Image (tube, rainbow, N blue to C red; front, side):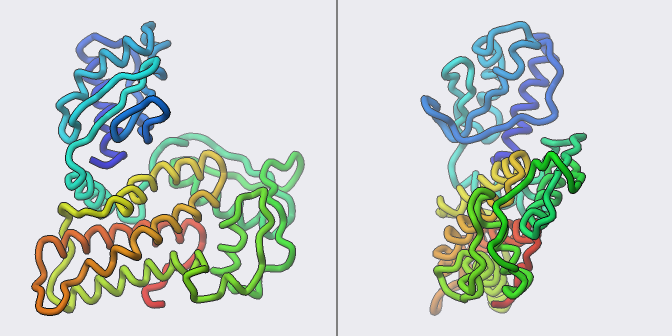
Length: 323
């Protein structure tokens, strides 16, 4: 079960509790699930009970206790534990099932994986100075906010509410992609480096690793086609790749909410660093014949490639097929 699917499952549990007359609240369109905090347990946690308590005229702990039976036993959920003032901590089924679920979700959504309606109906006004970096950051924020159902209006004038530290020099000589990365990858309060390091095709260059990882995924996919097999979601042991892909929707929402494309850029590096060591396991070796395991690994690799391509596109950077 993916975070998106789990969110839908929690919403369904709320709806069932309302239909049974145990809760008297408006059913939310979406709830947030994330990694458990301090004192939590399981794979994911949600504070939906705390959010609904006031409207339900119940304590958060009581709301959590009402919702728990509707979640326990739901497909893909192994156990639910209530902690603290009313957090629902959810343990999922086998990791292999989770991998297949994430891959299916990404294959179904394509470049729309991680998109939501968190900011639906919201208009975000960005007031930026006449500065190259501010303009580039604002342009990326417009696209990222759009993935969460919001809309941006960019203005020039005081009071400025988006003012990243300006670049020390014109980034244009780096070329379009490297210039975008140089301005977007650092946090807004950090001064960007406008240096030739961004052009180096070496492991020490984060932009190269991200684009190289995408190109390698595409190459592996082409080679699998030549060997006569395609991708098919299934059980795969790849914890780091799985964690990076599962976390992508949360990162995308945070980048939109906090107007921080740097968060997305850094997470793409995480995805790339997770998938690159995994790629050598995808294709058969020597006399080995393609198997279900190879097809499942290919599906996971292609899912990572989809996330890398989608994230780079939001940053205004090309995702090359060959590198």
